[in-house]
Length: 111
Length: 115
Image (cartoon, rainbow over the protein chains, first blue to last red):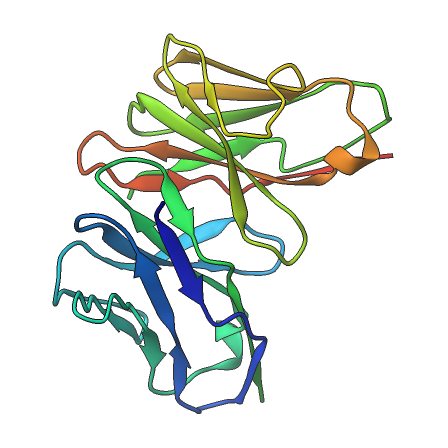
């Protein structure tokens, strides 16, 4: 079945450091890919998405590019802030079926 | 963007009682809603898929009689945890699929604590 793998962390960075959270997937066909963010005690918020190969999703300084050849959708940000501390989930949606989530990566940004 | 609400946001109940959690799509009609459970520091686990006007489809290992799901209208789905026990304590999140672009929108979650 479909699956999503991502680095579990925790990831601890200093403010203004560069962030990369790796995400790879296994799926039949061409799923849509997502990154969600969950702040402490809250639900999930869509951070960005890409629906086809080579699409780049971006939001709030975060970016991820849909790489079909490597089945990856790595999340990057050039300069993280303390307010970015949260758990980040990579997910896929294959033709309107249910979502498949990765295990989540906890990010802590220190001032 | 589309908004999904959940009520209550937090609930504490005694063991053996039942708890109902509501999930509403506020500005769109959702033919399909999903219920997830999240254990502490873990990812989301899909519990069931709820289609308006029909019985919910439960994932393997999820007790149908324990977690009753009703999707009575295009904007409301409810999850009832029956005869709750401490091991049912968890964070429950719903999502609704939007018909216009097939995207899922997530509710803010309900934290259930069973004493």
